[in-house]
Image 1 (cartoon, rainbow over the protein chains, first blue to last red):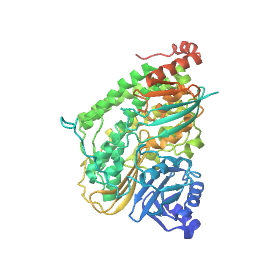
Image 2: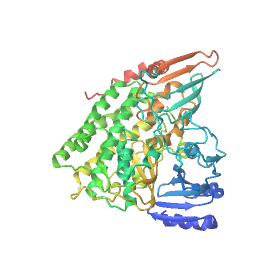
Image 3: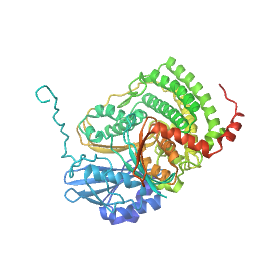
Image 4: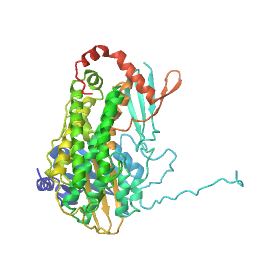
Length: 158
Length: 408
C-alpha cells in the first residue's frame, strides 16, 4: 500500500465529501472534510487502511476559524484529516467512539482553544490550573500572557 | 467492601510532567483511575510562537531532560523540511549516533528503575553504574551529559575524530557484554520474573485502540516503530530489527527494552564505522516560506510528533508537540484497572522511566471513617515489596536463583 493507492481509494469512496486532498511529501497525506462527515471518514479510514493510531490532534487559530488536525498513522503513511470550525461557534464532534485513545487530545483542545467537543465522554479540564478564569483560552492568538506586577515587600508596606 | 480513593501526586520535583492520579480501590484492587495533568505546564507551544526558529531549537531541547535530543531532532528535521534544506550525510550520521546513544542511556536508566521498584536493588546499582559508560561517551561527543545540543539546521554542530571513535567503540563493547548478562537475568532470574510477569496487563486490541506508543505497545505484540514505518535521518540504511514481545505485561516491556539495547549497540557500531567524510553542516536560511510539516521521531519512550506551521517570517505560526508519555497515559489507566495497589509503582515505572524515581506523597483516605493517612512513596514501595514477599513464596524461588552464575 502506498500514498497513491490510498489517495485513489479515498477519492473513489468519499467523492463529494472531499474538500481538499493533497500529498505534498512522501508518506504525508492531508485530507479536508466537513465537520459533519468527520466521524464517517475516520471510521472508513480506520476500517479500510488500518489508521488505528491517532498520533495527536492539533488545533490552529486561523482568525475567523479554528482548524483542527487529526494526525493518523499506519505502517505506511501519515494521514491528516482537517476540519474547520467557526470561531464564534466552535463545535466539533467527539471521535472517541471510533478512536478511544483520542480522549486526552480532545480534552486538551477544550482547554487550550475553548472548542466544544460534542458527546465527549469526559469534558473536565485536563491541563489548566483549578483557579483558571473561565472563557480564557491560552492558545488562541488574541490571548497574550502578561506577567503580574511583582510586589517586593519593604519596610513601608510590611 | 468499602471503597477507598487514593490520590497520587501531583508534586514531583524531578519530573517534567508531574501528574495527579486519583484511584478508587476495593480492598487491594484498583477499580478506577482518574487523571489530572498540567501541574508543570510551561506554555511551551505559546512561547514557541514568539521565538525564532533557531531559538526554538534550544527551547524544544529543554522539553525533557532524558530524551532532550529526541525533541530537538524532531523539531530540527521538521524545520529542515520547511526550509527545503538537505542536511549533510556526516551531520545526519552524528545526529543518529547521539540519538541511539540517548536511547541506550534512557533504557539503562529505566532498567534500573524497574529493578528498584521490583525490590531488586542490585540490578538498579549495576545498570546505573553501566549507564555512566554511555554518559561518558555522550560527554566525549557533545561536551554535555544531558542537553547535547548537537543539532543545528543543516547537520550537526560538532564533529567526531578518530580518537573519539575508538573510545566510543571501547565503551560499546563493555555495554554489550553487560546487556547480554541483563537479558539473561530477564529471562532466567525467577524472583525478577515472578515480580514482573502478569503485572500491568494490556491486550493487543486495547493497546491499539488507546493509541499507545513505544515499548508499551511493542510489548503487546504490535511492531510499531517510527524508525521502520516512517524512516527519518539515516534509519533506512541501518541494520536493525523492531523488538517485540507478546506477554503484554511489565516483563515484556523489560525484555523489549533490553533487546532494543542490543539493537542500538549494533546501530552505533555501524554508524561509527561507516561515518561518511565531508562537511558536518550546511548554512540554513533565517526565514521560512509558508508551509506546514509533520515530523515524527522514535524517542526512547515511543513516538514523538511535532506539527510545525510556518507563516513566511522567522518565527513559526504554530508548534504542536506531543511527547510519548502523553500517548501512553490512556493505556496506563487501563493497566492499573483491576491491578493491585502494590503494583502502582511498577506499572508507572513501566511506561515512563522517571515517574516513580523520586519521593511522592500519597494520601490514603478510609471511605468509612474518613480517616486520612499520608505516606511517602518510598514507604509505599517498601510496603509493596513486603506485601509481595508475604504473598508469593519467594524463599523457594530464591533458593533456585543460587544456581545462576553471577559474573561479578
